Every structure is written in structure tokens, then in C-alpha cells.
Image 1 (spheres, rainbow, N blue to C red):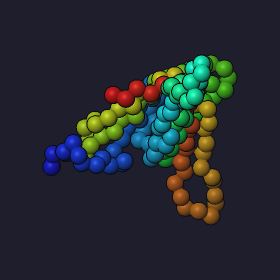
Image 2 (image 1 turned 45 degrees about the vertical axis):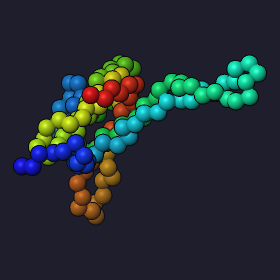
Image 3 (image 1 turned 120 degrees about the vertical axis):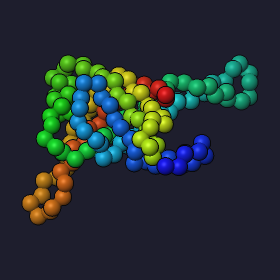
Length: 143
């Protein structure tokens, strides 16, 4: 197998998702992995120009989707949050190269599910059933 060079692009299809205490199999997609920093603007005294400094960092919700296999761990986690448990967990999204070796890792902390969804049930279609869960993320560290 050829050796990957630093300048080679990575595929978006080799990845793993690890959620503390949950084994759900492989995920079809991960969406929303993002972060942004607020801009704080201020004027100092008689200065004519507005100065801008970094403010609070915010991270986007992450949506995980996978084929429904009848496991209930994700739904049970969502239900525990709905009931007020405050069950926050750690989650890692791991990008792999062609040899399935870890290339990059995004470690997410303070995670909890805010939305659980099952794809439509349709008697006239012959599609796979999918489950998706939207995870609130407090912080992301890149490893």
C-alpha cells in the first residue's frame, strides 16, 4: 500500500465515533463538527477606530447518523437527559487514513443528546431505516 504524504488529501469516509459507554456500530455520517469565536468590539477612549478582540468560543451541535440495527443505547441516553439526569459524556470523532490508522482526532466534552430522530417509515419504499441523534458539544480539543 502506498505511503500517505503530508500533502495528500484525506477521504471523508474513513472515520470512527467513540461515545463513552455506548457501542452503536459504525456511523454513516457525522455533520456539524464546527467551532467559532465571537468578536468583541470596543472603542478605547478617544480612539477613532473600533478594536476587535476574541470573545467566547462556541461549538456547533454534531449530528450522528447510522443504519438502525435495533440497539437502544442512543435513545436511552436521550431519554435519560429528557428525564433530567444531566448525563454528559465524552465523544471522539477519529479520522483514519487508507490503512485505517488515526490521522486526526476531535475530542468533544460535555456532550449530551438534544434530539433523536428515526427516518420515515414508508410502506411503499424499500429503503434502509436510519437513526440520527443531535449531540450538544461544550468543547472540542483537536488531537
